Image: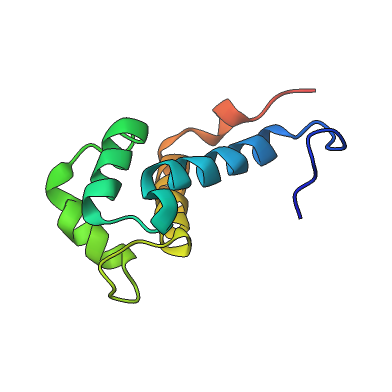
Length: 102
């Protein structure tokens, strides 16, 4: 349950990131709340071009994400993409750069 702006405490960085993911999905999916292949391509090109750069793999990526075969990506399928890309990025970065010393 989301709280109203007046009663909502300050959100954490993680919560803010989660809200950004939700808002970005709906920005590209519009009222239909599903991404067609063209919508996903536009989202990737505009929002994830530093992490996903090979558009040649869009057909395979789309097919892999579209688990129910309806030729659209729903929010749960989109979250799978976010999880895969985030996990791959995590593996590329040196974990010591993310830790802080007390």
